Length: 356
Image 1 (cartoon, one colour):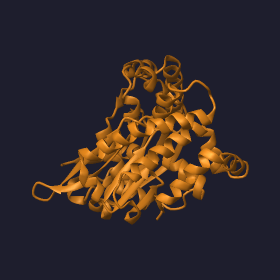
Image 2 (tube, rainbow, N blue to C red):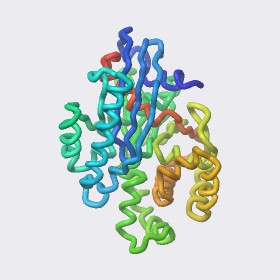
Image 3 (cartoon, rainbow, N blue to C red):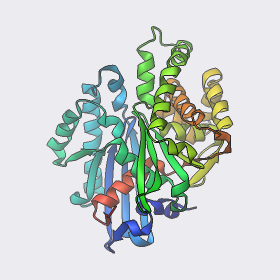
Image 4 (cartoon, rainbow, N blue to C red):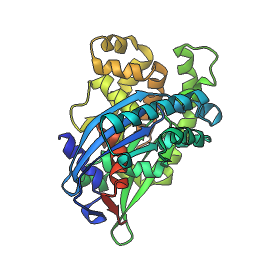
């Protein structure tokens, strides 16, 4: 499945739920995520036919969410760095790529939105760009992820989960109220970065062995929170297919299988278990791989071993809490990293009007 088909589901939550217009245009989005800032440039020709293309995508590592687990705030130095990266890329998109200013959107992910002082970041960005910055909540982000990570034909039989740096979010669709499709969100306030920082507060040394020991002691708390997440919408556990995205899942799939070749890439729980064991006991194997594999190198430049271990534990905990998990179909959604952002751009560009 090529990228156009993969992204086709960004604009369909079954055709009867949307109205479309035929205008074309180039739009850009800057996402302030927990572990990085992501830029996408999208050309839209006809959303109804799925005629739109991601013209460009790039990211810069900015671990802005690490302060949230410490005191609930974004650290001042992280705010300053994030604002600088956003402004520089905004100028690049506007002046070099020539995207119209009104077609550039700056958004913050739900993981960053958990911080108490996001207004400081908003004000700092707006001072230079004069652009409003909107932070989306986990429910909205989950809905956008579902539209971007699940083929429309599988909506009713699937749930989606995204393990980000700041939180884990997703959801599923069920049929309620006279055959209307209703989205049910799932979320928990732990991601790769926030879980790592929560565990680091309990450690005295900087070595991985103590980190693993403290993380093991933290797992009952994590399992309780994941159980509570599913408990809010238990129908999720009945879904036959689980589509997953986010940095932790990208890191797992890339280090274990190599760069994803398809839009939707199947894996098994046993794959994650093996990957987790290597992370904790033979990390040098991945370090050696990164010397010859550019995709593995990118993973290790993005995430430290501790972040990878935290992400792997989140992935395992989410999967192991699902009954009969070995009978489910599990997929890594390759384009999940830009799915919700492209959906946001399509919605804000008024090319799509929601009617449900």
